Length: 359
Ligand SMILES: Cc1ncc(COP(=O)(O)O)c(C=O)c1O
Image 1 (spheres, rainbow, N blue to C red):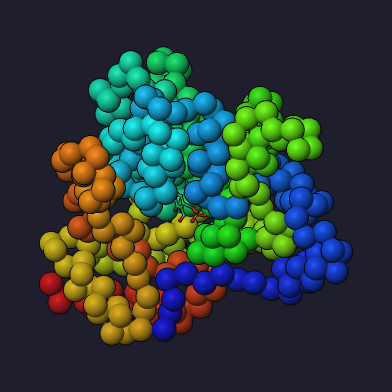
Image 2 (cartoon, helix red, strand yellow):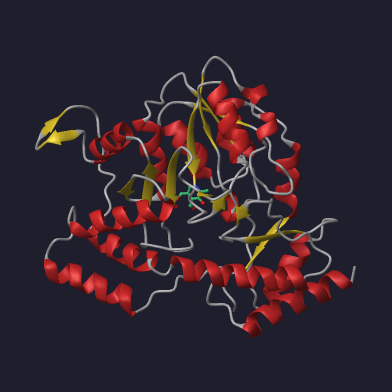
């Protein structure tokens, strides 16, 4: 079976974990700080704050910005549930805006119509490893005095006009095993703001500035040094991993027939967390079955948009977002991870092309 994702753990990660175990400092030690510094540098920002997951990074970023009850946050319904759930966790309301069909990302042209007096922030999601239209989003945020919290969970080192994902507003990254780099479970917040950096650190650690004096409600959202050791070793390999992903994607772009391959707007550096094709004419599910029969993994990210998930419908009622709903019917992600071999790529291409040619 060619898996849809495969974490690449080498001897560097293993040795780093053993070193932490031998050191006896398993949490709140030097590895977390070193990982944060290296991650901030990779993103081109002043600060990075390590968390226990991408979900807690999003939650903490929203808390640190003071978003809560009565606030509205504009986001995309075509994403992993955590993007919107984090908004619910702080008591705010996610307001869904439709996507651009070619990029699968939030349509900046539709954001202004969704702004109300309660809108506090825009939460764009750089889906599949491609940055959103950040010129459009930042201009709207500035004009309406809105915060920008980027869900960069799928876009480590993705670029937009020379800047990296997570460096426009406050960024949140995931380090889950399927991501471009992993720490097993883990997350990272990125920011240039001194106040947000400080707030994140305090809330991450039970609202504590002075030992056992708690200034505000906080949580335990910390990363352990074991996870940081893995993450730091992986971060050193991020460029190499991303280059391999881009090489695999280039082969698919050149060879696939009958499907819509990923679109990369001018000025964007796609990091192909996923290589997602659109399969027209209601043939997506049959193609997926055919891939499975040929022992090729694939996945649908995401089959049911968030505004159509049961508990969201109960909370906010029905709404219709046509581009998102069509994308959910047509998208299919195929393996693009760095451990694919040339033979794997050929098998994937020939299986898809043979199926699509049958018409
Ligand atoms: C777009 C997006 N947001 C948020 C998350 C949540 O990250 P984690 O699984 O690390 O909590 C993920 C990870 O799957 C994601 O893909």
